[in-house]
Structures are given as C-alpha cells and as structure tokens.
Amino acid sequence: MNFKEVIEEIFIKVSGIEAQGKLASYIPELANVDASHFGVHISTTLLEDFGLGDYNVKFSIQSIAKVFSLCLAYKLIGEDIWDRLGVEPSGTGFNSLVQLENDQGIPRNPFINAGALVISDILLTKLDDPKKDLLSFIRTLAKDVDIDYSYRIAQSEKSVGYRNVALCNFIKSFGNINNEPQEVLDFYFDLCSLETNCKDLSALLLFLANNGKTMHNNSQVLTKIQSKRINAIMQTCGFYDESGEFAFKVGLPGKSGVGGGIIAIHPTQYAIAVWSPKLNEKGNSYKGMKFLEGFTTLLDFSIF
Image 1 (spheres, helix red, strand yellow):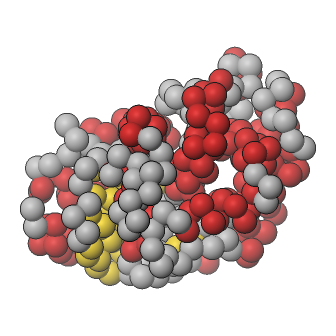
Image 2 (cartoon, helix red, strand yellow):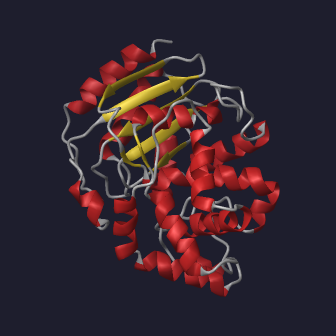
C-alpha cells in the first residue's frame, strides 16, 4: 500500500482549500500561533515513515495528551480505573458540568475535561513525581523523540481555566477527586501544555497500532486487551460531540486537540498525525479532518 502517494495527493488537495474556522483564542498563547501551518506524518508497523509540510514544527498537543495520561493510569491500576470513569460519548461540550450532577461525579469518559481531571488525580496518587514520571513514560514510547511541557502555555491556560477549576471542585464534592483540587489542576494544565511535532507524535502512539507494544524495543506498554479498549474509546469519544462524524467519514480511532492536532490509529497498520491550527465549530482541526477523510477514502481502507 503506497501511503506516500496517497498522502501527497490529499495533502496537495487540502492545502489548496481555505482553512475555515478560527484559532483557539480563548487560550491566549494559542491565539498567537501562525494559522497557515499544515503538516502530516505517518509511522507504520512496517517501520516506514513519511511526512509532508510542517511535520517537524512543534505545536501544543492539548487534549491529545489525555491519551498518554489515560494509558499510564490504565497501566498502573488496571480495570479499577473504570470504577471512576465511564466509557460513553458525552453528547455535550468537553467542559460541561451538566452530566456530572446526574452521574454523581463520574465523568462520561476519560477524554472530556472532567475525565482527564480524574485521571490526573489517579496519577498524582500513584506516582512519586507525577509531572516527571509522566514525561519519562511518554519518552519511552518511541526512540529519540522531542516532547516536553511548555511553561508558557501552561501558565496561559491557568490564567483562564475557571471552568476547569469549577469542574475539579464539583467532582471533589462527589468524592471522585482524592487530592487537593489545586494540585490536580496544576498537573492537568501542565499535561495539556505538552508540545511535540507530527513526526514524533505518530511515532509515540504507534504502539496502539501494535497491540500495545512499542516498535523500537518491543516493550509491552499495555496488554492487547487494554490497547484495544483505548482504541475503542478513541473511536467513540476522541472528538467530543463530533466523534460520530469522524467515525462516519474517516473510520479510524483518533484524538484531537484544540491546538489543531489530530492523531489517528489504524490497528496493525499505522499511526498518522495531522496539524493545522484553525478549528471548526466543534473544536477540531478543519484541514486535519478534511485530510483524514480524503486519506482513508482514497485508500479505501479503514477499520470498517
């Protein structure tokens, strides 16, 4: 299967369209990003890789980082994780408080903000140095990758994170946050500030296309069943209330972030990362969504 030819054809086609939408300006630092950036990179289980455009430019991965924190928490506490989290699409905004009232403080899934706050609480409890330990875990997933927290972006998010403060305290009131809310929030904002590029992002998440094993040293990060379940949640919940649309048009598990990045996984085949900062009305990358729809359509090859 010639991924290179397909990527080149779709990249040229999508590059020629105007990126509708807008930057995530409610986070001050993200409002300063050059909206013209567009990059894509694929890493395959046959150890092929190929990129086009701005695939080497670092960007804020935002909620894509929630895949990493979920994987580490799942690795640490196993199936007990689902006592504190659901696995259903939310059907509401990613920062909604509405469902928490009805669901007694149990977030619908790990990828909405409430769910990621609970994951952050788990990691704070289980790790000696959560921020350092999470970064160390992520860096073991691929060889020679450049990923780190951005103090600048974390501070920018903290300056406007009032809804997340409310979410964390609300969940705490139901007894589903064990640590002090301020500690959980500090870790959560750092998590969302992680920066890398499309090339490294596709390499880092390739283990989810390889039954939970890394490609560079064959390390078992997650069990085969755990890897399957992470992919399932990405399929149904990875794009907030546009997850159904993504499944319908693209047909791959994936996760987006308001920094304009998208990661998509084809189990047994590849991980592909796309970045274009302008977001559609659902908060997902406009060109990223267009590219991945064209990519799987031309390949005639998705999980369905």
